[in-house]
Amino acid sequence: MRWQAGNRITLLRNGTEFFPALEASIEAAQYEIYIQTYIYELDATGVRIGEKLKQAATRGVVVNLLLDGFGSRKLSPKYVLELESYGIKVMFYRPKISAWSFKRSRLRRLHRKVSVFDGQHGYVGGINIIDDMNVPSNLNAPRVDYAVRVDGSLVFALHASVRNLWRRLAWLHLRQVEAHIPLPFPVFIANGIRAAFVVRDNVLHRRDIERAYLKAIGKARVDIIIASAYFVPGKKFRQGLIEAAKRGVRVRLLLQGRMEYWLMFATHEVYSLFLHHGIEIYEYRASFMHSKVAVIDSRWATVGSSNIDPFSLLLAREANIMVQDKAFNAELKADLERAIAEKSVRVRPEDWSRRHVFKRLFSLFVYMAVRLMMGLVGYKEKQ
Image 1 (tube, rainbow, N blue to C red):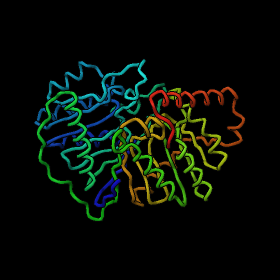
Image 2: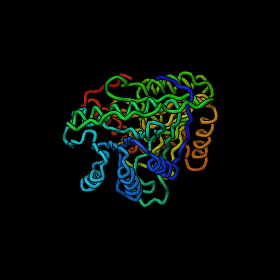
Image 3: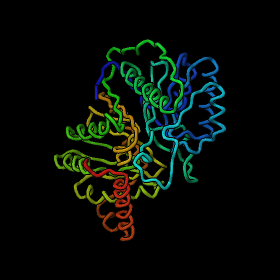
Image 4: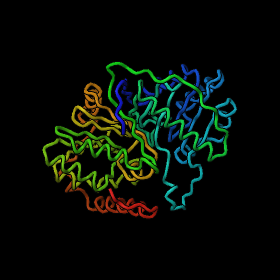
């Protein structure tokens, strides 16, 4: 992880702020566009982004769209052909999926959401190309998530990452690799923010995001707020949070209160342990929360695609931005505290201990199922 000065990091809340910014960047692009996303849904938002990409390709911009084979499996092949007819280059990361395969490669997904425009600015976060209101219920409330716009010296690392992955996959897919487009270096922003671009892959950066979290947790002195949609931390992560609480750090976890998938019940298995050690747990109930962010003291924050679960920390390709800036951290922290105060329910130890025995047993069953699944694909809990 390399901290770099000279950046401007802009917090974007939900698709209401992210998609207009993304569309403006597509419209302004002159040379090339890289977009990596886990889900591309052909709803109103997906159609609108697609039209912007078609217009960019029509005016000569090289558009490279990389989608995950599982997350975007519902995207119509007809629509993909339509995009390609405009000159947009579309590739799928691990397009072969099987419900009956226990190969670890089946769970190695492209979960990151990174885009770069003309090598001059980019976006990193947890927001897929899907409408905020496209949620699995009749709930009239938007999905909650975050992204950041990155300007400055760090964009060089973003650009190198998306370009190199695209070129490697193009070789694997036996597709023509386009010649490198010479672009000016990103502008260094005077008095800018120190930030780092941290990825997780299955080669050289297998534990980089987890280690960044653990290092920041280990240095915490005042408070820790983690907002995570899928939260099944490993042994070292659990120990890190408990040790922080023991030395007087206020630890707050903002977790998903609405069960979108049955595997999310595995999160409940760690509630008793954390509550016993004074860690505060809040369940977001106003809508579906997909946030993957954290703020530690006033000196460290992260926004990205990585959840705190085995799939994100051990299998998927993920990408996070780490930030060292008091103003940015204060903005994100204030947003999370509003969510805790206004849209969440606190889980208290006395209430949790009285919950129905069936729910406790089911949480344990799901947690063991997750552990078994990880074992079947060849991973053990070493963290």
